[in-house]
Length: 376
Image (cartoon, rainbow, N blue to C red; front, side, top):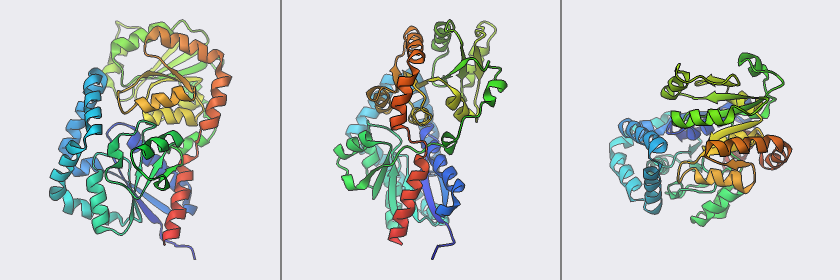
């Protein structure tokens, strides 16, 4: 007999970066679109719940290091990858202080399953789940290939990863193969639907033009200006330059002292980034996990123009290993790569079709449904 009350999946996520919340929301959206699976997905910014002060400060440090001092970021990433002591310490210090509040937080959701998709506070999340609740604890990894050891500490009941290369990397860290499920990377269900071409009219783009989307929110203004100059001569292409929430960058590109070429459109944050990617012939972006996986889901080749050392290296490796795009950081090299990809687009699309899993969110939920049903 079918259970009428939906099972709650509680995802302990973080607004730190974009990929963690993006994957959580993708699963939530898929659950809402498929009521037959009988799931209710709740998403909590667990980082903020554990320590809002630490969360705010660490996000600011991350943003500065990622944009201006990547070598410092790489040192932090590498040192914590080799030794778990710093992460264990901040978890141990916060656990007795926040335990009661976090137990109540999880209890309020009455989950049938707890998923962590942000590794820093997994010690606390796992400890509370196992001490106070009789449910499984899963980890959803938002990186590809280069897996930080924090994802494996402590050892979860099972792991959801994007692909076989990531599964292999996770196994090398000591996780049993029977616990690893390479079911795809959760992207929004918009990637399972045809592109909405109204974006051409909204941005005043000729239907005869190809679109190249440039995700620029993590880049310095001077670099973006050089990139614009290098790309501008490419014919029959309209470039959509997306600055996201980076207001300083948007202001610098809107300044009277810098005039964008006619074949460029400048936009800030948009809730139609999915449609931009789906309508693009090519996407120029840094190697962020969600953006790379969204491009793959949409079968769009990429030029990776920035790789945050450590955490994003695996995403760039994925693009290069399967020839889904090009890694290039110099503006003139990016311009040459763009022309080359547009000229040979069919080969890139063919390779992308072999690895694209736009329905991964639904596939993951179906697996979770079967797992919970077998336990119940």
